[in-house]
Image (cartoon, rainbow, N blue to C red; front, side, top):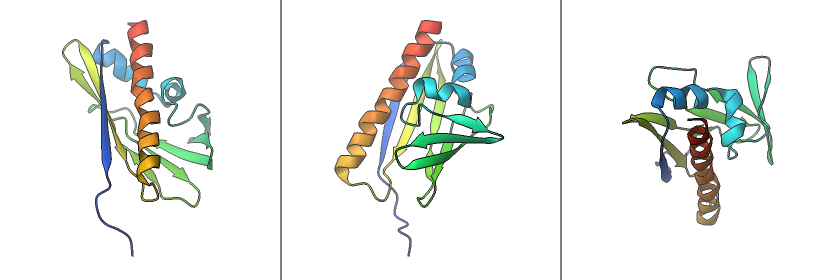
Length: 137
């Protein structure tokens, strides 16, 4: 029987000195993810209509939210034989800049140490996005 309890989460946010429309236009394109989302993969590539990422656990199929008016950048990662990983990611207009909000769910097979290590790795992604966008602004 599946465990239906809520998973532990880490909220990771960062404010970026870049106009909201420009930040979202860059971040919502899957082909830009490898430039800033090392937590996803540095080897993201498209095969037909399907995005693939090479991970230590093998090939992952990644499904991205299409561009949308709510600036949702959610994506899902599927590795054969493992539960799908849902990754909520939002961009929020914040004055003349942008706030990025990332929700990291603790996966069922993660112990405390692995979850903390994952959170540490993922925290680098918004920092990289901030550096890229502020350099381009």
